[in-house]
Image (cartoon, rainbow, N blue to C red):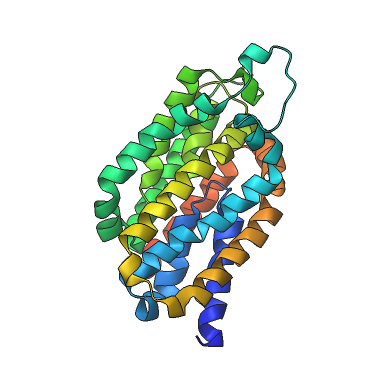
Length: 275
């Protein structure tokens, strides 16, 4: 594999890692950068290129595991987190309830999404739609959130956030943008909604990557493994850098600035693509 191709994997990993946890859509940004500049489909093939964009998200997910290992280990009984009332402790069932809606719908719509939605034109519209939803969340969400820690989340609230997460199946809408906005509308603080978003991301994105790899296994060449590995490691490193920074930032500036960024990007893309 040529150095130029590995550099493309490094760039896409950078884009993934730096945008995965911000509500701007990592998948949307990768589609934009790839379709308009890097064009990995030309040497990977269409389905392998789409699979790559999903698989390198595992690098970002590994970063979540590293940063939030105590909370994640507590879900499977490998670590004890003290709470004022242990009966209210955030547990694995909250995560399962939260991921079921998008997990089921994702399986049902996978072929349609792969075939039709991994395009810059659709990303433009989803960037704007997600931005509007984020502005609504900041404007109409409770001024004083009643849920300021994961241990205060109820199963019903977890399920409602899970329903909102289904919007993120549209590439460009943003999983974190959808779930953080949903969490804020349902009474969570921005940081609590972000924490819940990151934890839900581990099983749902790992599952999506596995399904994509199995489905498109015949399209993936062993000679491309170096490309996948560089993208994975790049996403992991840059996600580590971005996670803690984002958690502090979203608590301070909320969602509207990210929404404005999305709209500006969408306008620039629309001018390039349609005019």
